[in-house]
Image 1 (cartoon, rainbow, N blue to C red):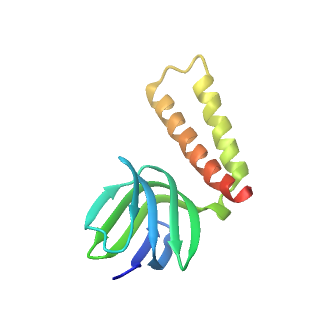
Image 2 (cartoon, rainbow, N blue to C red):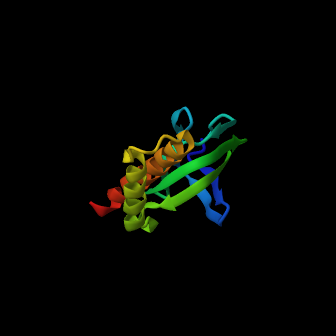
Image 3 (cartoon, one colour):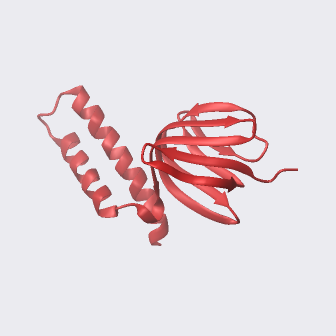
Length: 138
């Protein structure tokens, strides 16, 4: 019985990962999803969250935001809008994005729904990145 599957992680910046994996956990738009060998065919939209990749007995963590996941005949393709390995996250940049989003949300004169929605999205992305980066800082 197969214990691994072929995985490609591709962003607009290029190929992030191409190899065999034992497990992939991602946040979809409906909740967390784990992919193991022999997973059924499916296509899912991605939400904002932590991605966990287990390959060659090692576990890698990343911030994975937006995009899609496809499982087709045992091959898995992850096409996220944003994908950053935990060790590559710029924590200072994430902190600044968080602070800026907080300022926008706390501004009493701000009543524009679009501005508020964008600030909430930026806040959530910053929180995901900070959370994932925090895992390697312990």
